[in-house]
Each structure stands twice: as structure tokens, then as C-alpha cells.
Length: 89
Image 1 (cartoon, helix red, strand yellow):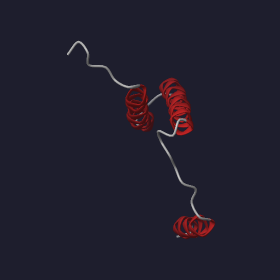
Image 2 (cartoon, helix red, strand yellow):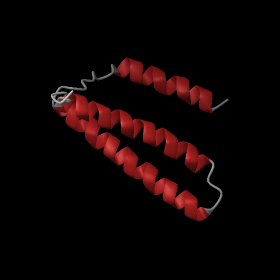
Image 3 (cartoon, one colour):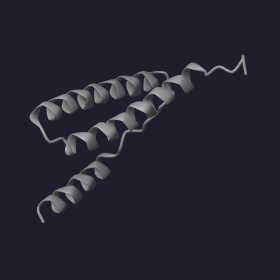
Image 4 (cartoon, helix red, strand yellow):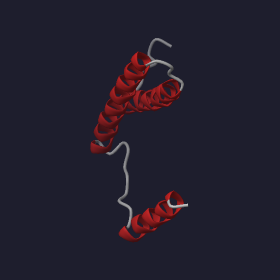
């Protein structure tokens, strides 16, 4: 096991998955926070986690490790209409 190392792509993917997990945890904690001080603390932690997650995603995307395809305008418009209709119910 001495020669067991992670490649940079694997390390970044692990970091990204960890940040996603933390964001979910912090969001849950924030929803259950009972005092303004705890709300402020959890909001800051959640914001920091979102920022780090975005940075990791952008770095991985720039290296071709997390490719995304641009959605077609028609699909975007369809999603907007769907969620607009749900919000207006």
C-alpha cells in the first residue's frame, strides 16, 4: 500500500464530492438553526462551501475532467415554463 496514490483528477473529484456533501449537511443544519448567531454561522459556512465547490468545478471543467454540454435554448425555455407554472400554482 505504500505506492497507493491518487491521481490529481481523483483528488479533485474527491474534494468536489466532499464539498457537495458538506453543502448538504450545512443546509440541513441551517434549516434547523434556532438562534440568529447559529444561522449567521451556518450561512457563512454554506456560502464558503458553495464558493469552494464552484472553484473546484471550474478547475476540473477547465482541465476536461468535468465536461458539461450547453443546454439547447428550447430545453431551457421549456424548463423555465415548467417551473414558472409550478410556482404559480
